[in-house]
Length: 199
Image (cartoon, rainbow, N blue to C red):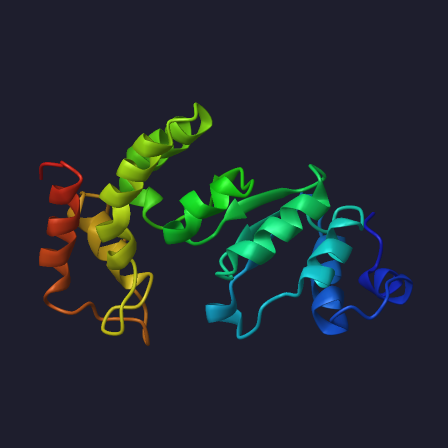
């Protein structure tokens, strides 16, 4: 049976204590590995480096982190301090290549829904040391990164439109995210055409 979260909370120092207690409670409620998503644009705050490191030290709190905080230098510090004891993924498609350069091992992405082949090829190119090819593939995906969200169609509205265009019936977003603007189908088609996909 998992340890009650309050026991973790009592044992740990107050490093951003509210966040620490929250993630400890989440981990205590499951025996499954936990991957933390650090995404300030959605949550309203960045999880501090010290808090992330403290969570990696507690059994079954975090085995990995998806980083969408936009601070590559701090991510480099996190990876260096973890020294192989935790997995760090890109959680922001447009920063995946820079995060690979500082030691990230993968991506939990949006564009991967329709540009998975290109993203995988970029990882392969980077792993074999062909940085020029990795950069070429990243540049090919920039329109996909730009398509993911906008003021008139925030994520996940564009992804739903594109998946539907590909013939995957994922429906539409619930309020207040929808409905999709009329121009989004045309923009989705342009993104796929740029990747060499035929519809």
